[in-house]
Length: 244
View 1 (cartoon, rainbow, N blue to C red):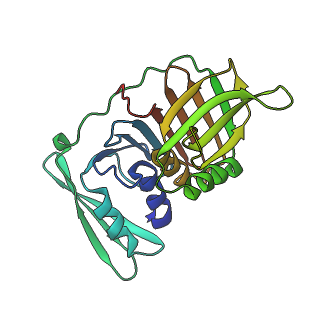
View 2 (view 1 turned 90 degrees about the horizontal axis):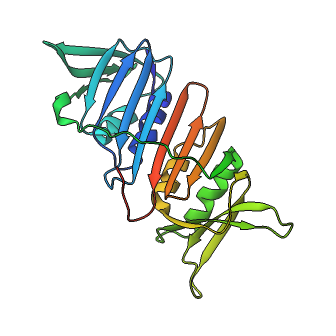
């Protein structure tokens, strides 16, 4: 049995509205999904424990279709796999009303996900649900503007703070700033990121119990969320640049 809501949540954490093709790797009831965004701006890993699926590697080619199928079901779902020779070919789901079949792809069709060499982090910001909600609200208030600038400055008390600015800082354009505090090594840095991707990552992880944002002045952001059974990790490169 798998729970529909839990499975949808795990899928949306990597899908983010665009990431269709991934491999699900299940070992000892732990599901691991590595992915790269279409734009190559994000590399991520989702790890979910206590999933009732046999040890397997499942090639998901069209995640949106899988979400559409799951969308018509309710509650806990009966789940089984169909195998042809050495490759799993189908997933079967069933609730009280529907029996669904999702065709799996050839694993060779799913591209390899690169690895990230973590730098020494210059900023570490504890992330709580309130901050996640506020950052999503700030971005939504400036829909259509894709720029997020992360900078370091001092507040009126002389304490170091990290400032998230949505919108163009130049001239008289609309903008929203949000301040966060944590461990900050140095000041006066400004790094641009894609605010749409940033918002989508936060939006799909509002169920966090604990989290953190790390920032390297080399132009890399790491965001990690932890909930009861799921850990989601994202590496995001500065806007219009990609190192993956």
